[in-house]
Each structure stands twice: as structure tokens, then as C-alpha cells.
Image 1 (cartoon, one colour):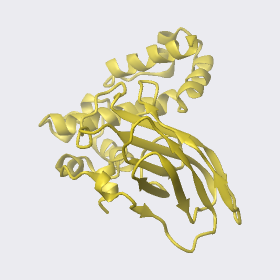
Image 2: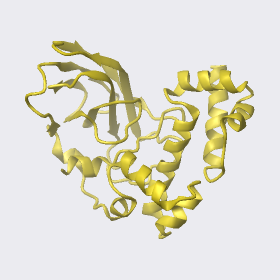
Image 3: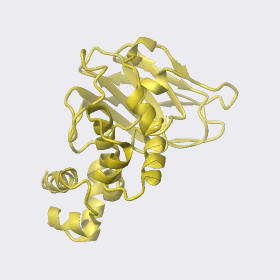
Image 4: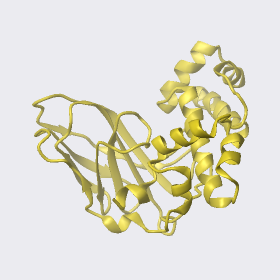
Length: 245
């Protein structure tokens, strides 16, 4: 619990100074730990390094600013600590799945209407993941397989199910993957501007790493969704764009 409070202090400092050139030393002082102990504790609590978490917070804030202000992309990139708008645009596109300008133009199409939509490429392998999704929300759930513990970039496989219960991902490529899941309360499906610091209307869960090897059979994975808190890494992927393709 004390470790979580210390990490939370560092995360709050990140949120307050997104445009500043924060270092791990700066954050460790905020958490009142040595640099190396802080990095270990931060990774253990959040699943990400301090630098990776800070980068994710900056992209999350850029998403919010793009849809709640008329500020130019260049101005937004500087406000969140990027000196190069080109570097920012590349990072944003990789994380969110679309460019900053395209994200600003996204329609309010509700992705949950595509329940049962899957991203499975046949002929890769016979490996599959099956399991049970638990959630306090009786709402649709996105479940995707990612290379890290962060909902960013295009998942290697994904599905959308109509609520808590069984799910399946098939034809899985070899590798070590994280199962990332997300659901949202009714009436918040079209909210582009989930506030920084965690949004209790978002429910998230993860499992991993899950090792998929050639000629593996079935992996059984259960995952539980919980309300998002500031200790959870931000969800960066633009699900509307992903599920609309």
C-alpha cells in the first residue's frame, strides 16, 4: 500500500507537469525513493517503466486536447513536452492508430455496435486462447492481444463480446503477449475526452505475459475488469477507428 501511494505521488507529479522535461531522478524524489528502487517499484505497481508511463500520459492528454480545444497540433505537441511536432505525430499515430488530425475528425460512431467483430487471420496456427471475462458491468467488452501491458497500436488479435462471459481468440502467432480488456459504462461510449488520472466509467483488465509457442494448443485465460484508477496505464488506442475497419 505504501508503495502504491509513493507511485501515485509520482504519477500525479507527471500529470501536473506533462510539458516539463521530467527525469526519473525528479520522479524518484517525488516518490521519496532512490532512483533504482523507484523504477523497480513503479514497474511492479503499474506494469510500465516511469518513462513509458509518462509518454502514455502525454499522448492521453494530447487526445483530450485534440477533441476539447481548437489548438493547433504543433501547439498541443509543445504543451505536452515534445519539441518536434514530427516526433509527436509519429508517436501519436503509433499509439492511437490514427494521426492527430484524423483523431480530431473521428465521427461519434459507437464501436460496440460491432459486437462479434473479430480480427483473425486464418492459416497462422492452431493455437487459441479461451477463457472467461468477469466484469461488474453488463456491457460489451473489447479484448485484444498486445505485445506490452498497454492498450496502444493495433492488436495482433482482438474480439468484442456482448458482455461478461466466455471469449475466444484464434490463430495466434508465437510470442509473449498481454491480453488487454476494456468496457465502458452506458452513456460514455462516445466520450473522447476521458479525463486524465483514470476514469471510473472505464473498466479495464489484463493478463500476461501469455507465452504462445509454435504448435501450442489451447491456452486458458481468465480476466477480471475493474474501474480504471490513476495507477492504470492510459488506454491510448482509438477503438472507434480500429473497430470501424
